[in-house]
Length: 141
Length: 451
Image 1: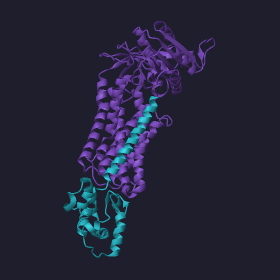
Image 2: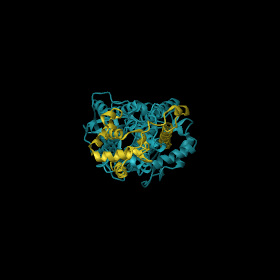
Image 3: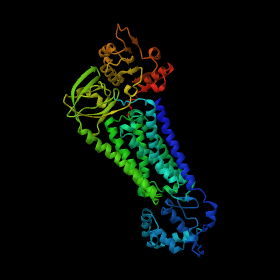
């Protein structure tokens, strides 16, 4: 009998773990209260769209996948939803995007240390690659 | 036969103590994920399934980390349950934990494959490789434990591999969580993760350093090796410059024979001697492979160390019992022998019955001594032999429900039952006793050969 009780308790603990994980997911994804949402700015200042070379944009799109950016970022639901970049082109200039990609000193402090370290490795990319990436990101609006 | 002993908790206070420790344990396991869910955690979700997967991962880490507490042999916390059932729980909880870990991975693999990145370690970030390795380690850990005998892993080797895989899996998991760092910006979750790691470290230090250190100061010497049957031996041990062990009859200890406690080469065996004699310990062991096969060749004077007493398979936990029914198969007699010898030393007058199954007369342990105990105690022994010799006028075959029901009918209200032997025997006896009207709370089963 005791073996069965032990089994049941183990399964109940597993079910409790799922329940608490579901509670966590629901809480963290709950829509903000309406009052707070109303007073919150809808987005950062909108950057005017600059004309960019379509070939460069296409290269940037391919490079985004090649460089493993999807491990931490999602675009159009693809990649890591933790840090979506769907409207980043409206919020940041291309210079700012460059700084965020390589964790330049201007943004370094705003990032958790491990994230900053991961981004710093992108400083080794050549300017052409970074240019293509910022071109593509600037079109995400 | 090696076995771990235990018994059902007795009485309301034991139930409360059990409930207290179980609640505390559940709280510890789920504390990290509870804090994350409470509002103290991070704000801003990444999609329900993504965050659910993270929550499941955290909960699984809590469950797997908590496994270290279960096997650290904390006597006070284990006492209400019986350490044997804790090992059953340990095994099942590991399966549950592994399912959660696989779930954590599969949700991401299915819904957010980009977040996982490439699997090849050369191309993947180190913390993602650590996560994948941890998953493999956990799977190996559970597989080698569930199918140890099928894989023909020798017990001592398996224990070493088990400890190494478990430690490795937890270290890799923490490296994974630290590297991913989704919630480390939050001071609460960071603090809890540190606390979790510190607790596990303390447990490992306790089990691997403090406990062996304490044990090494309490040496025993093998004074006698007695052949009981063609394949069973009793080892008698004398304490060296310490007071011995006070134990309850039916309990067991982890025995290290000829090696220092640091070596972690210990095996659980029931005490078979009287609990009224703290100046000597006796273990009775049947040759069943690996370590036990060499027990008979132990030279007198061999140094030994004993971690114990453990287990709650003892009538001393039920002082108001009005009588006792014992059911044993083969080497399962060892803890029951300890109980009977103790009752005799105490001149206990409560009625006792023993249904004892064996292959044949030659393999029946303590046959003559049991006859003497029938006189010293109010004891009736029913020997059941599978292969009886000519002229045997006792019961034959396997112990059956009919014999047990007959004994239960004669027993007074308030009788407690202690069953130890192969699982089919104890299962049958438990059912038969329950059908005969004995409540399950008065039926105590020894779960042995867990490893």
